[in-house]
Image 1 (cartoon, rainbow over the protein chains, first blue to last red):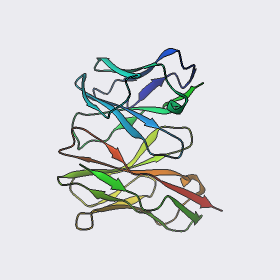
Image 2 (cartoon, rainbow over the protein chains, first blue to last red):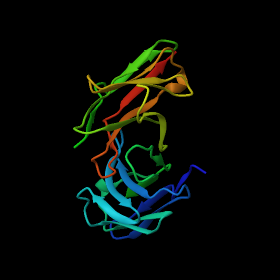
Image 3 (cartoon, rainbow over the protein chains, first blue to last red):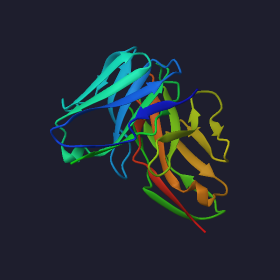
Image 4 (tube, chains in turn red, orange):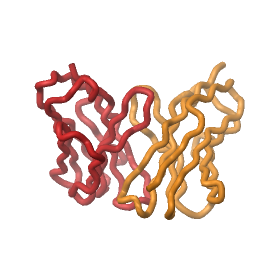
Length: 113
Length: 114
């Protein structure tokens, strides 16, 4: 199984809503990532978890709150988002070392209204 | 810190013609290089990777890339493209000092015309 599964595939939320994005992998990977991708732009790193601990936060606003409840799951909690946060949110995982490839999910298309 | 530069934002090409997508990287330590492809409204799929060993790496669908340390490049090539190769291509770098970061270039849009 080389899949990274993200749910939901699409999400529309208001600026006062609270929602969560979910990501799951069963490859035994101990590094998990959240990326944000705007249209016609590259993926932009947001967070990295290594062995369920947050190792990198790329100065992401606090309205995005990541969580890694166990080695297979990664969540991204969303609260009080802005319309400019609308984007494709991608989850990825890989072995916890640089000399390995990352596997990506299909993404969650988020629209903030 | 590592970084990646993709020199061409768009590359138009006719079907069955050869193509080269350029990628240059910057890093002060050992690097690992990747090419990913993204089709519309989808995630990223690994096309090929350079981790160590032979500097020429190949994919199952005819793409190849060559790691050139002296020129800090990892250009992607295909001798004959198909319409189905139309997609966005991202070069990415990870290095041994990067705390597990995987950083992407700006991307190159390959448009194959009949």
